[in-house]
Image 1 (spheres, one colour):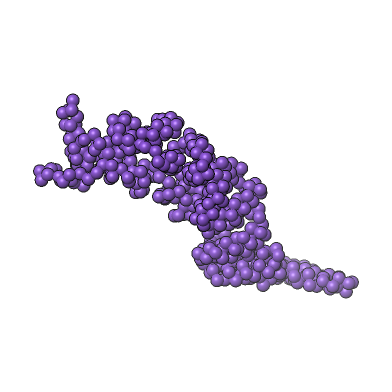
Image 2: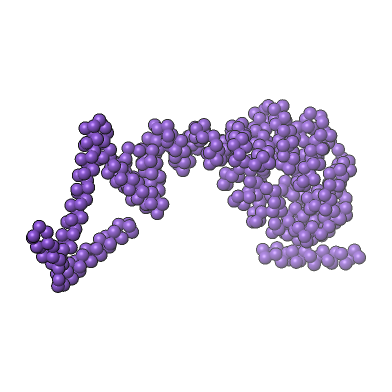
Amino acid sequence: MLWSLAKIVVFVALVAAAALGAGYLLESDGGVRIEAFQQEVNLGPLEAVLALLALLVAAYVLFKLVSLLIAVVRFINGDETAITRYFDRNRERKGYQALSEGMMALASGEGRLAIAKAEKAQKYLQSPELTDVLLAQAAEASGDRDKAERVYKRLLQNDKTRFVGVRGLMHQKLAAGETETAMKLAEKAFELKPKHEEVQDTLLKLQAGANDWSGARKTLNAKLKYGSLPRDVHKRRDAVLALSEAKGVFEDGHSIEAREAAIVAAKQSPDLIPAVAMAARAYVEQNRPRLATRVIKKAWEMEPHPDLAAAFAEIEPNETPAERLKRFKALTAIKPNHPETRLLVAELNLTAEDFPAARRALGDLAETHPDARVMTMMAAIERGEGASDAVVRGWLARALTAPRGPQWVCDNCNHIHAAWAPTCMNCGAFDTLSWKTPPQSDAALPGSAEMLPLLVGQPDPAPADDLPVPTDGTVIDAADETAEQASAKSA
């Protein structure tokens, strides 16, 4: 639109300039005198300019006639394509000019103009591999998906442009939400150009979304083979895919294959917590508790996690709370100052009903890491030590408004997941879930924290003269005052 308006403005300006120039020449004196063959011709200023323009046109026509004459002479001498080449040069010139203008229009975001220029270039040029590609991209830019799809299908008929056609159709199907067809096209594009990094990533994402873990591992190996993925990243992501494949095999009832796949995943990436937990359970099923203990301790050294503690507890499921507390010392001795370790020790002591030891294990976590788990454990400790219901309710009120603590959070979109998954359920990104504190506080409570109200028990009905529980947090201050009074009495 702007380009067409600019051309109109330039044309009007040129016409105005020509009119002004003609008027100036008519009013000016002087002229041009030409003497030739004893003949004399006098031309006025305007006549001289017109004669010059006529001379230039005549010279151009003469040049074309001479070129045509040369082509005819070559044709007579045996060059059968001389005349055809003469006329084709003009067509090619016009075609390439239209192609260039179409590319500029496409780069400027003028999709409709780019389509018009591409169709014009298509008339003059016998190069569909150029004009069809421009036409398809211009149709996409203008939103004409049907036209783009027709052109991409035409590109499939040429060996030189088959990959471009397949890739274009793949993007069309992805935009339309037809992931199954898009994956088949991605597989075909990968077959045509296995080194193409974008096709590799698209195919890997589609295979992961379709739970085709075996195919995704083959694609991941191709990325490593062709140098588009560092070896350490490949090792980590292959472990993620192996774990996902193990989960699928386990759901199908093939427990032996699932155990082996989980063990392989844990060996490839010892920091992949779900793989380690599954591998530990696999070792337990094989009656190899020492190996289960070893892999859990190795992962705990990298990052303490509640799932590791749960898997460690399953090694000896029938032990007493005292026996479990003793056995867990082998795990809690690793990174003893880590908040997750201190929470684990506190929970073990709560189960053993050693409430002072649980309080000592928590230490200052209520001030340094005041999340929901810590507050709920403090409520359980107060209940176990015989504190009043107001104090217990104060800690529980804090738990309701406290941050939820570390969760499985997508590094790409910050979406919070209740459990680990190979792909983000929100943005579809692969291997982006990390165990960290989310930026928002709407995550679900961990499973161990949800069990703690059972230890706290139900509070007695509040007397009529008790303070009401407001929504602005006043109950927390009242609970603190009650706790201080109870401490003063005990002192």
